[in-house]
Amino acid sequence: MNTDTPKPPFTPKERLLRVLRRETTDRPPVACMGGMMNAAIVEIAGNCPATLPNAHFDPGLMAELALTVAGKTGFENLAVPFCMTVEAEALGIAVDPGSLACEPKIVSEPYQSIPEVPDLDWESLPDAGRIPVVLKAVERLAAAGTDLPIIVSLTGPVSTAASLVNPPAFFKELRKKKEDAHRLLSRISRFLGEYARRAVRAGADVIAVGDPSATGDILGPALFEEFAVPYVRDVVRAAHEEGAPTIVHICGDTDRCRAFWPLMESEAVSVDAMINLAKLKRFLPGIVTMGNLSTYMLEFGTAAKVARRTETLIRDGVDIIAPACGLSTGTKLPVIRAMTDTVRSRRREA
Image (cartoon, rainbow, N blue to C red; front, side, top):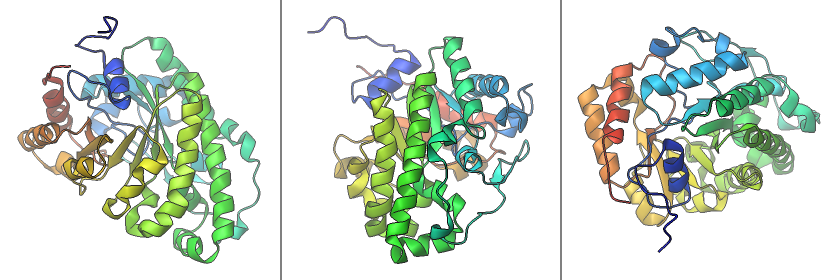
């Protein structure tokens, strides 16, 4: 027996990294990965000096808000950024900065067809827009020396591409202009891969890739396999090259695409509330699952109902308890605490 094996209770960082390595833990982590799934709700950001939208643009404020969110909500990680427009802005796309109650939004997609997208200076894009802000915030969080893991959330390749090209045209051209689509997604995945590498070098413990536009509801299994899987995998492999594990989130009904999850090579998969994670684990034995507490329930349900649903997810063997998708900024803190406190009160033998 290896006497050097850590014994519970684990620190939050140890616990999450052990789960991602498929090692035993004392209980599941409870996390919120940032980006499209951030927990900077009005109740927190509105009462913090590092408020929004200012914290989107200042690394010190971004780091301070990440620490405050973790402290107030009970989520066992630090997560940046607080939106999914960082990549779009680096690509030169106009972004509305949003407000306290509204996340930044893309003003409009600049191109009407995939072939219209120019050959950008893809290699320099990680120096553009707010990416340096995020990386400096990560450095500050790493220097803070907490026992919370740092998750940096990236917008996935399909969703990033759909921020460049008018979405209806983009999805139609995945079928009609395949060569152009592959060329664009290949370039975007290289850009995102370099962003992931720099985030790990800055201090990120985990890279999360949220690709809501890659949902099986829109793509279907064949296009999901052709256009989502290889380019998400490119980003995952870039993070792996720097020694960081990954989480991939895909929105919507992914049941028809579930056979392709292992091909993306991510340590964990995060799915929407409609997916039965116990069933997914039976279909893919050994898969690390993250989720999937309904964000509708978190916004409109009671604390008692949220606590009961959280208990069900734990009993179902979900590996990382988390919201199923993006939290509404109007979600109330006591309801979030019902979720996180329920998980944190649990213990199981390692």
